[in-house]
Each structure stands twice: as C-alpha cells, then as structure tokens.
Image 1 (cartoon, each protein chain N blue to C red):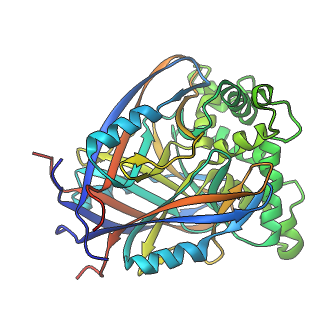
Image 2: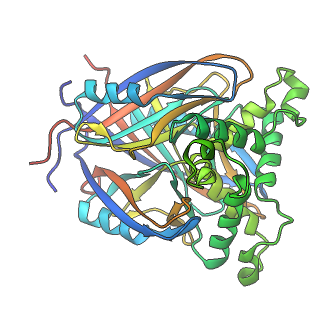
Length: 149
Length: 149
Length: 149
C-alpha cells in the first residue's frame, strides 16, 4: 500500500436537547460534515462534550427511542439515592451514571463520501441530564480525498 | 515530532452469526487486515453496520461468552414489552436496546504490526437480533508504515 | 480542503489500580501526551489493554465515583454465579462482564493543543478485576501540528 494523501477536518455541532433522557438523530448533520470535508474514504470520530450526555446508534423510530429511554432509566433509575446528590443537590446523579455507562464517543466508517451505516441505523445524541441542554458534539474526520487508484 | 508518513487502509468483514445473543471472535480477521495493510504503528477503528449488533472485547472462553449473553439479556430482557413491537411486530425490540447500550464501535491500538491486546483479550462481534444474520463490520486502519526512526 | 500535514504519536500509560471496581482519573496524563506530541487539532484514541478494565468519562468527584461503582455492580453483581468460574475459579466472572459492557476504548477530540472535554468531564480508567492491577492504556494521537492557515 503506497502512502496516501491523508486529510483531516474538524467541526463542532451544537445540539439543542430536551430534559433527559432525550434522544436526537444527528445523522444528517454528520453526513453534511463529511460532504463538506471532501473526504471519500476514512473514518469519523464524534465525542459528546460534557459528562451527562452520550452517543450511540439506533434505528431512530419512536418505539426504539422510547424503549432505549426506559432501558437507561433501568440501568440508573432517577429515583435511587445517589452519592453525587449529597454534595451537589442538583438531582442529576442518575444522569452522570447513565452517561458514563453509555460512553461519550463513537467511531464511524466513511465510504464513498458517506457514513457507512445500516439502512435503519442512525447516529443519536442522548441528553441524560435532568434539564434541557445545548450540547456540543465534537467531530474529527480523517481520510483520503479521492478514491485509491 | 516530524510529520509522519501516514497511511490508511479500509476493509469490510462479513460475519455469519447465529440467533442473538451470539458472540463471535473476530480477532484473527482483524490481525490479518492489519498485516495486509502493512501498518506498523497506528490504530484500527471497527464499526458494526446495523442497529442490532455491537462490538467489544472479552476473554473469549465459553464461560465468559455465556456470562455476557446472560448480562445483555438482563439489561434488555427479551420477555419485556417493547414499544418497537407495537409498530413492527418483529420480536426484536430487546435486540435494538441491547445493541444501543453496547455501542457499535471500537478503537484498538496497532503496535509493531499487531493489535496490542491483553493476552486473554479478544475482539468480538455480537448479534443481538432474534434471527441469524450475516453482519458487515467496517474496518479503518490508520498509521505509519515503518518504525519511527 | 487541501491535504494536511498529518502527524501521529503513540504512547503507553501504566496505571496502578486498586481492587475493582476502582476508578482512576487519567485526564492529566492524556493532556501531557497531547502536549508532548505537539498535535494541535486532531483526535486521541485510548484503549484499555486487558479484558477486565474499561475507559469512559465522568465528572470525577467522590459522589459520582461511588455511584458508578454501584451501577457497574448492579449490571454484573459480584455475588451472582458466573460460568467463567466453573472453569477458572478466580472469582472475577463479574469483572469480565462489567468490562465487556463498558467497552475498552474511547475517542476524544484535540482542539488548540488540548483535549476538548466538558468543564466537569474527566477521562477515567476502571479496574473491574477482583485484585489490584497495574494496567496498560495504549494511546494513539493523530492530527495536525499547526493551526490550519
């Protein structure tokens, strides 16, 4: 394999989100960034900035969205006692735990200038906090600007 | 640090998987891709294409495989009611939730032309769907083709 | 976008950790690696080497640390029976499951020569094993060495 003409682009998204758990489809915004970057083959890393949000992929339809909200609330129920509350009293102990369990980052393939996802697979940001948040998502795209010859 | 001779290689694996939860060791296939790419130092990103599969690492021995299947079924039990079912009736509401909680992607270090994993650490693909699936896993490898001088 | 001057740096951290679940803040060590690499814009991939450890981000304060320990022990309780034990009898069946559910890797943005994290967001290594461990974390940093002109 010869050395490639590797390029990089960075961008910051700002996602308005409702009280958690809120799940927002960000696929189209990532696709737009990939197109703007002019990267044909490579990968995209996205990271949720902040300790009460997370990123993953789902089939973005109302049923799965509801089911996933229920599941994160089973993993770290809002009604449990949290040690975080004893110092901070901001009512979001469960939010911190949910986000840590889900993880802040995701890595996705770029093929033929698009994200290679399943037909019913979308990238979602999740706000676990107990209040609405405008959340930054940082995106780094690395790859080649043209098809390998 | 001087600019490096950075290279990239991409590949697509196709993993035949049984009804979920099924857990398949894909380490040897990733090692082969790293060797073919000729990349000595760098990292490998792998992403499960599809919203009912996931990737992680485990000690791939029958006990841990069984224990992890039990654990994902505790997080999102097949016998619960899922809102996804009300629209789709395909019986895999739990599969979507399990996969979203696990996450679709993984990032692994390449050192000395190999994946740097623990001695008893293997990379696994998980099919959470309630039927056998042939699942694509997209792999992007970025790094240098020779030891830094 | 013109081709960029892409650089890479790799490093290995060694984290002394107590009996699991133990959670250690490694943010300052990653920041030091980014500074040493001289990379201004890009991303950092970190991977826990070993099948009973994981990486994520949290607000690193004693309450959240305690809450997250409780949560991973709810997901895979130490007091359950694990199939792993039937062959290995080393008492860490839950450790393997917890680590697999959390995932070994994380991807973080580098902006202006620093990790772009939330104000109260730190990167943590988690030891899930039932004994103290010195754990390697492999770090790969890729990006550009100067601001885009």
